[in-house]
Image (tube, rainbow, N blue to C red; front, side, top):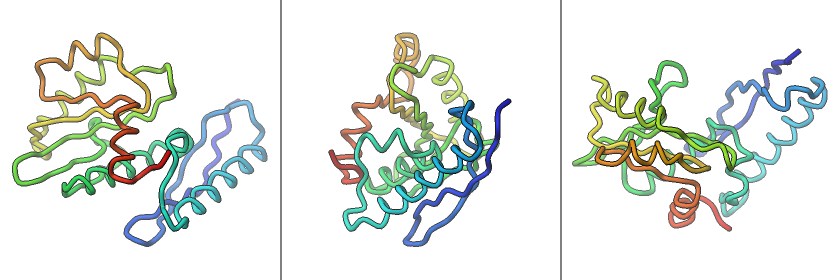
Length: 183
């Protein structure tokens, strides 16, 4: 039996905290009490990190935060890079998690917080290529961001398209460069 334990996870945006519901799927074999304790520990850690004067996360923490918080982190990165950004809805976003705009570019960004060894495949590249043409987006570029890596097929699929592939090493470099994480 898989338990779905709704819980509130806190993230900071624009100096205020907002809460959203997260359903924890793994480890599915834990009892609800152990999951609640794990979530509580995670929530307190995130609040502590957000309240830290430096407000920086370590590269290792990128895999400990939720996928939605990682999307927010990538949105923050593009803001610091000088773009106006918009987080898309979590449902019905067609694979686009963040939209970044400046004078000349509209960038559709898909974020995949995957563990090491779980590489992003060419299907995700194909989905993003199609999603960037949506009437509501009309992106002229796209970035597929992951904490892991890409398959050979994904790399081949992205060639000669307006899609940039950012693997875990490059993402860590960019997050450090724009002082979102520290090492």
